[in-house]
Image (cartoon, rainbow, N blue to C red):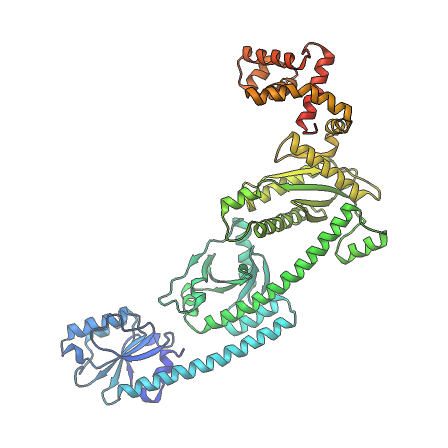
Length: 562
């Protein structure tokens, strides 16, 4: 749009005189021109040049003053008054009001026809619009050409700074800088410093516009970091925000003025081009992740015909198989509950997939923090990861890694519950598949014995693995079943929880008082239940062999192996 200064430079307004706020004429834009008299009501649009003869005031300067005030409050760019028959001299009160409000009052000769002025102004508006449209189309094409050449984002940022005249950075949806313009060093340093210091998402505020004509007006946010103002434009694709275009200004006022110009169109084109860049990068990254995931799964399942294929593919994907690794399997236990609690506008499957990606990202970041290499892939509803681990390393290092990872995951997804199974170290050709099987077994046992949120080493499951092996014997299954079936049937009929009573009693090593406290039972009630257990099983708590059989049976029952 033309500025008021450009409009006043038109031949037809060569004799016009700016009586107030002359310093504003180069800042204010003119989007329309109209002839207006009393009443104003809602007939004036924002950024309109209003022409008036004063005839509606009937020589009453108080009425005329109220008219001028209404024009200003309606959002007009300026008021042009024809000096002559009705207004012989612009009142001092009007001049004082215009200076106070920084509202340009313009005096024009009576002889100039308003129709000619309106025609000239609208022609100038159309001319500037067409010129701006050609400029933005040219910039859009240049941006597209740059993007198609697969440059780093900094090159796109530099081109945009050249056109917008302000430093800028391009960040992803987590705030990490992906590209910056040549003069954005100060902006980038302050941005990173703020993120590290606060360790939270930046607080933004919605901008106020008198007239939100452009769709971007509702989506641009204003950030205040140290002594600079940042206008943040979202970059969206696939119905989600991929990143942000952040433009910095030394003064907040300059930032607001920036958005009242044709720069909005340029921002729209820029965000569209950047969205294409993110789409392409996402497609490349998704392909890499799929290839890496397939590779990690092949390692876990030992699905390689020869070592050469394995090493060749590892090298192409950036993995180093010369390092020793150990397997950990993680299971997110409560994703569906978190989904229902957050109620996102997407399906559960898509939401879960994005959460798994977030967890994988955090695994990589946490491994980087502890200076370890890691490989990971989703596996059904679990996540497999192989982390660099040496034979001399203590298991505490793995638990410290998982502790740090859990803290980061809870910052990202509060209340998320993860179970972890940790395999053994295998220093042979079964380093991956063997450790994977161990981790899988450990996770299965840990969830049964310790419940959701467990973290268990394979080497700490000797007893449980022995019990599982025993349970495979058919005669053993019959013995255990005959021992506990009467208790299970009685519990079902009387709802007395004899199985739980026996389980807690054995866990507490036969200590009556401790068992009663844990079950919240009176001592006599517990003794009655124990006598009932003996009666139904035909076994005695005092007889060592009977007690051993009860303990073996209840441990197998606890593992759900019988």
